[in-house]
Length: 151
Image (cartoon, rainbow, N blue to C red; front, side):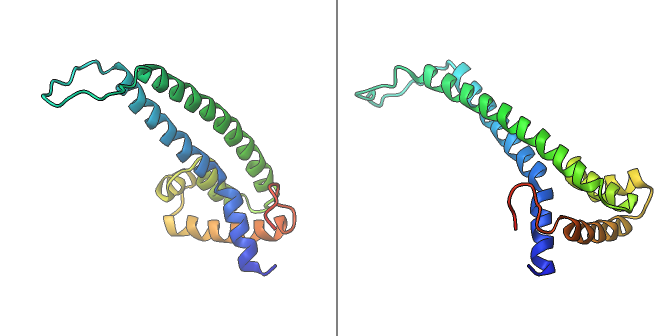
């Protein structure tokens, strides 16, 4: 495997937390929308004829969708915590603490560059360079043993 592929696999490994977090946020928004639908009790007054087969179980369907999404969120949160633990363990193998900080802030805490730079006390571009170096060093360390089968 060439170095570029190893770096891509490492970035994909590190990006799992952000991906899971975004999925959880999207599901929470869907739950909020479904709950709004379930609690809206306004009657639509229209001169249009009614449907021949109205959905009599609309509320039940919405509540089942909410319950299913809440279950998925719980599973995603557990997966996210597992991913954070795996990433933290992998980052602990890096020798340079500044690289660890940059990668931890970016991939475990999902912070923006400015927030990471502020926490580390460096300029944004310096943090980005530490990040890039950390990715390359981690790719070498992780080559052939990424926990989720990326080879």
